[in-house]
Length: 286
Length: 162
Image (tube, rainbow over all chains, first blue to last red; front, side, top):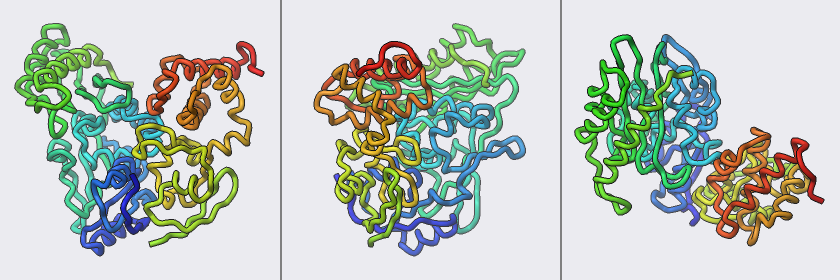
């Protein structure tokens, strides 16, 4: 289908973008890569009067290290997340997740910030951000604030970003020595939405696993932290009994809905199978 | 609202006035009559509309013409004229890697991008590179064959198809 009519402005700065949004009385949509917004317009799921293009705003680009955090500009393309050396070293779960995101041509346009702001509960980067305990930098008329990923994802397609605000960057605490990561998903076809997915990181220390962080996705209305599974692994060696304990604990963390494709019990089963696979391939980041 | 844009299409500067909702694919097909770019799903699933935008394959159905303002677009017509994919085209032809031809534009775009990044891909890597390209005729096997054979020929292995 074709999109309904809308006006278009290419914003030169975040302030300009927010002003344009206010002047349109909120009847506007921000676009970065456009790979969720444009199909939603073509499918007529939304019909804003104005599209505000953020892609030319220089302040939204760039990847740099600051005080133990990696700041990733919201306009960073998925393809860049696959190849950028700073992301590979300091935010390795984004690099591990990127090959699972859609298809090569989509990854040339889609942006990290767009994916997080869109907050599709079946998409990969939100779960990676949650597992890495990222913080999201949001600009509003009142100033800039940082929201931890645990508080950022609110509901299906709903985040802590209020109408008219702009996600500027993703801050990831740099990977520490001994940190291990793994990412995987179960999907019927390569690049299709996951039936279930998992992003895991942990530190291997003398006294067993520490700082275990597990985010499951495509299991509910937002990416879910598997807190009980994290507890089940903490302080233990990464062996078969520990993995089995984490798999068992998932029942306390996940409450997946029944779905036209398959029942909740099957999704929980798949989540356990996948968590076992991901834990078994945890390895030290590059 | 109408917006004036200027972009380079197959090496030529094009100036057009478009509605913001006009996709790059509609601009190419309806205004410029470059109908080698096909429109299937118009939602980024089928891959029939791939074009090169600043050298990388993108879905022309998901890029608005206004977003391509100031950028370089190369369509299958441009790739064909340049001769850069003539060996790939010959392999597709030789191996019956197309039947109806609707997907072929996108297949050639994906294959060309793959081979420029990774000149010696495995069959699994070729399949992965084609994961966003639907073909409803061939079952993909002949397409993978054609791309693998092109990679071999470009590496100097095997015979060139006449």
